[in-house]
Image (cartoon, rainbow, N blue to C red; front, side, top):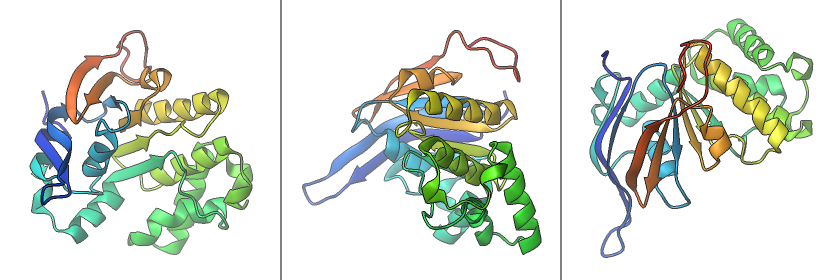
Length: 240
């Protein structure tokens, strides 16, 4: 088996100190292969958001190891982590995190402003990403005037504009009705079918069923790690 793109071993995260320490992760270990679609589930306080922040280079662990593409996270300084995060990762959040008074185009271009990419190429890349989520007709609309489903599709376009290897989706359907949520999950599934690694944080069973694998957390510990049964992905041609 090839080297995993993500490997965590006995990962720990403790907040606070001086007698008020609160453990959020308590010795979590697993590997994720390149191109895998993994859902991480758990109730509030289970540690799933803390885990996502560490996997996405938004926070550092207190203990244990995290290897991305075979290299230990703690071997990078903060600036190097930021560069790697911008190049390798895309993020989709429940709250969309769009610039309300900016156009769809400007929102999608945002990650490119931190990369060494000429302005003309930035425009082309952003137009392609917007088209990929079916919003070309909204390119110059102010993001605050879009529906919730459209806002999340803009967030997906922004997440994929840098052509990242890994997409982190944190409760991406949490603010959407069931129809819009289903459409968003289909877009995320398509990104997986194109070969991207997807890590989905969710408490919803129906969204987790899009994944190949479900890791469940409880009280900062891994409760289970199972393959999902019954879904068929066109890219890999097997049932999970």
